[in-house]
Length: 237
Image (cartoon, rainbow, N blue to C red; front, side, top):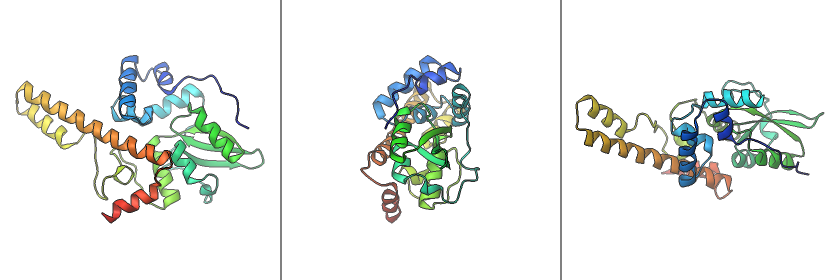
């Protein structure tokens, strides 16, 4: 049986309370989320308002939860038996430990305030779910590494295999072609109008990348596509 709804602060409110985000930036991120979709945490990171590392530390401190670095943690060999990959992808969680005697499942998540998702995982497994905080990108990498057998490397860039770019392509929101041209234009004394136009181009390009990421997330979480099928199709092109 699902637990009763719990009073909670939302992710954005917690980050504001922790002093790592202000109300103005939160409102801007929420507006971007309403426009393009996706998880608020990812939107905040993509917009450069909060780093993943700072977000993990802030949530851990505010909620009194442990945090885990999934890229470095030593996990049980049978960790994929704890939870189905469809559940992991839909709710953005990754199993890290199971206590069968106490019927407790510990899962890594970038948003431990998403109690609806945690309750659903508990309902599906019949176990009490205890969250630990991890970076969203690390959760994605862990899913691809443990469930799909992919070789993953932590990176500050958007991961091509997860969001539709072909193998070998990297897309860094701070090193797009438009960004490079804009920096060069400013350095070379280009007119303010040109610099402004290039800045708008960079913002548009970044928004399109966020929209693509959100679309893939939505399709996977809704069960419309499976990540493994999506990646296989990309590799054939």
